[in-house]
Image (cartoon, rainbow, N blue to C red; front, side, top):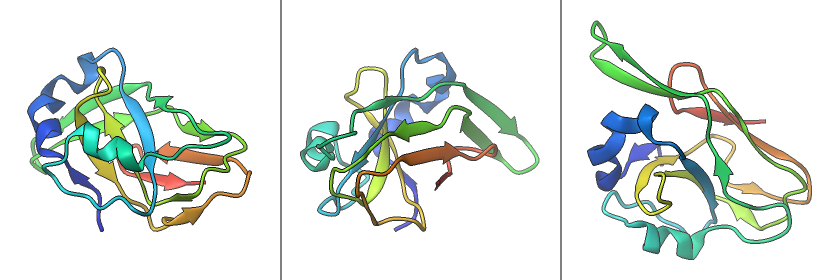
Length: 134
């Protein structure tokens, strides 16, 4: 599954850099993306266990590219989960400032990733909310 936007997230992304808090959560292998999902559905599959807590995403900006006809949403600060031992990561999900509206589903070639007590770092690419797991 590729990274994708939630329908609710599409409605608020024009204010992405003005939202004071944006959270990243990790979901387990039982979660299946649907653009119509609301957070209540997603958090049923949110990871839980040692080393896991929701992470605030900082350094957010939007860059409009008129030539490529895109608006790139970027975040500079990585999310680090130290000593993570909370099951299998299927994907990451970004939620709005209320922790209620899902903005986007983030997939990676590194997922699924079985956690084993090591550190997991989610790094955001300079060109937008695409990331690598280090």
